[in-house]
Image (cartoon, rainbow, N blue to C red):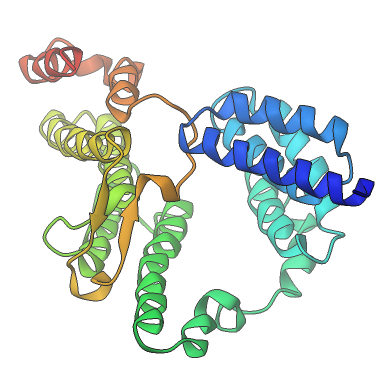
Length: 292
């Protein structure tokens, strides 16, 4: 066996281990595995790409500046490769947006193909029968991701205290694709996030009634998500636009191994909610969460 062949085998084994840890939400262990692997395989671009994504996830959880610097270094290197340049540009675009350095990426973005020329949208045209239907239906779910990303980046004309009306458009959009609560794993997560953002928006203007309502909705979807993910369930969709798709916990990697209910418990300690901490409704919510 040549050194090249051995390196390929080693990289495959490392990436399989990384995927397994990712599905378990063990992000720090994934980081350690990939960083150590690069000492053995310093030129493996796939490992570098996976590590770049880990740094991106960690930057939202801890030591933002530290991980964004690491992310940028890897992304700039990957941008010079044929295989990963588009993915690297996508990461740099989001990175520079967060750092208010948009001018550094705009020329690269101008060189990218339009959404109508990419593999994702065109693949259904290359498929037949049921596989084509699945390809089209998968694109319907991606429309939700695009809509959410754009919605979170701007709330239009609405100011704080009225942004919940804008965020609720995401709920309407999701319900166009998934009918009768048929959301699967990640879109239950998205609904939890949307309603939690609504609760925070209303907390800024101290609207107790709306805060409680949105928190209850957020917690409801958090419970569903936790059940699907941690009990390792598979959902067979029945909604018209996605009725050929299945949604399994094994399809995803996760930013951590804590439940969304634990996340909500911690978030309710935020000083933003201090004004209503002694109200009966808020106390009841905390009491219910602490029982789980």
